[in-house]
Length: 270
Image 1 (cartoon, rainbow, N blue to C red):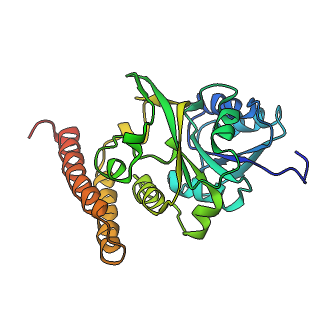
Image 2 (cartoon, rainbow, N blue to C red):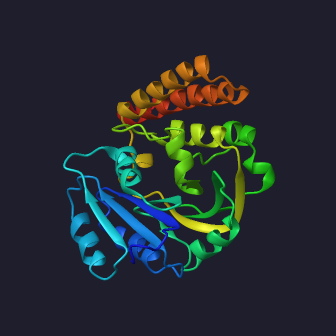
């Protein structure tokens, strides 16, 4: 990539023990028809052959940047590492076990954004694996109240983020925790002054992968949910919005659900 070429998108991929998937993720980004992009993959101290798969793929493409953690920092830490070096005007997060839906999706997204400086763009996605679902954003599902109250998928990768907007507002992930998405997405959506909708599938999301964070049951999940709740309560004192009460209630219900699931997972029906 030429030094004087403005980078439109930084695709940030957090990778931890996903040797069977990471090549697919990388190639889905590297083969994009839009060429002024960079792909930043952060190996979060994987213990399988993830590093080998990444380096093998990197040899084939000149727009992949490889970074590595000596100690595991979970997805939030890996994404923060990617954000620290990203140069793109816009950030697209891609989980290492997911992939971009087609070779031209970033070109289509580029046209949606145009010459505007849009803080957040809501993206469509398709869920595959142990279940199937198509999620296409609409004006009704992209209001701030909907995102706080109803949205089943409050994740960072179903949005495209203007990098300077994230930097100016100090929006970053919590590290070394599960559910690092909660505060990042809440702050990112609520502070945004402008938004757009990309009403087509950008990501394909893999559901039900064995050993993924969402299929792992342990008390750390509950502890991190409580920590997020504490942070939201502190935020409520200094940055109150009606939506924050909605999301606090959701997180309380989620904490109870995760605690019940953990008890059942550890001890069976109680």
